[in-house]
Length: 125
Image 1 (cartoon, rainbow, N blue to C red):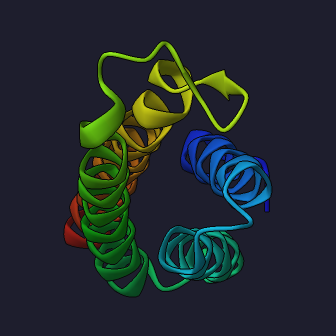
Image 2: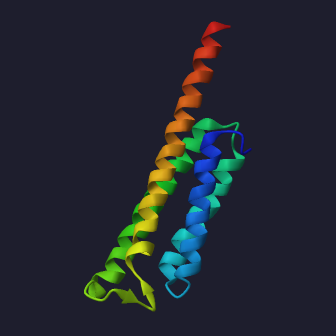
Image 3: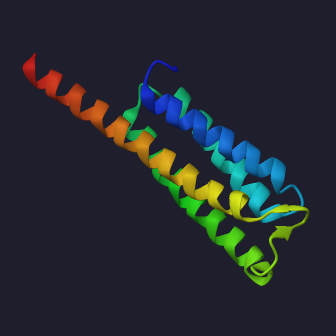
């Protein structure tokens, strides 16, 4: 399961989503988005034989990470002048969904690369 690089990228997405869910326990929308993102990352890791479905899961993860970044921006937009929001710096948690989106993109590109390799090997048979 963790023998391919896309599994490592999806594991990083999972860890970022769990960390964000832990940080934003009071915000139900962000908590829900990150819980769904974490679940999709685990499902995508476990569906390593179905690469087309993995690609669809990565698209969904990227959409959810973009939504989480938007929600976080909207909730912290009122407090942009304050360095601290709810007792911690707001800039690092606000950047975490963007980092998760980048890792989901890296996973999707690696999955597409694997799919292309498998299709070229099927052509040679």
